[in-house]
Length: 313
Image (cartoon, rainbow, N blue to C red; front, side, top):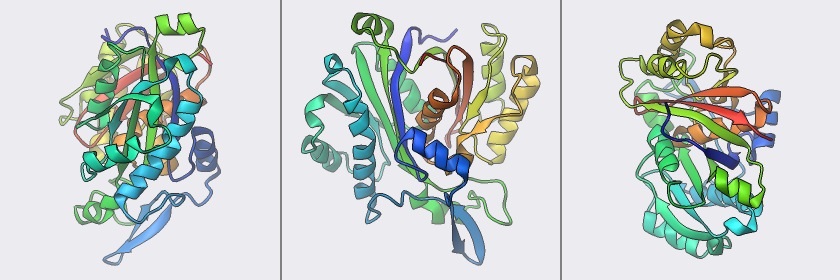
């Protein structure tokens, strides 16, 4: 059973190429309104996406503006009794922690943050760190920002980006996502309704054998016989699609919607380290209140995770 019990997502939001909040981003993605661009390299055409509404001068400026767009509404919607609260932040390793911390200290929202911790993790490792970080505080804000768009040439060179001749790859994109985690006793005391309850979560740290999702579904099926609608940040990389395929074969009876996966990668591309929280935020927006839904979360580090959420509002 998951070791993370009685944890809730109080709020969540995303900033991706299709929009600067969850509702707008999903609406534009579903409407298929110019969300991708074409990038040509060595006579090959690739599909990419970028945050056109933020300053693209340099990666630091991009991260700063993305963080500002993410954190401001999350703080605005946060109950006054939970301010200030700690921030756990994951950004590209190229970003100077010292410079970004100075920028945050001088920002308009710095007074509402009690402590800022820069994580060395990304992807599923960052998600686990988020859950672990709720042990002491009443609530914590977790934000992950990344850009595979900045690494698109390297991904193309290594044949890891999708193209007209290579269907097995990522869609280089960029963006970020944030969530506020809290506990049951805090909700009861402040009479708050969260977006969702984390009913179950589990991680597989050695998925290079492409059986990570199968192991996760076997474990989850011991406690739940219907995992409901499926969401995922799975890319079109062989390691991802084959891993999910083995999961269907392992426990198809608990996956009634196994072939109807909502893929956030198809909404706005592959945003790297921010895709896990972005997928959970998408679940919070699209799922049905009172109905369990499941996320299979992937990353570029051969790890997998499975989250079962129950939307509460």
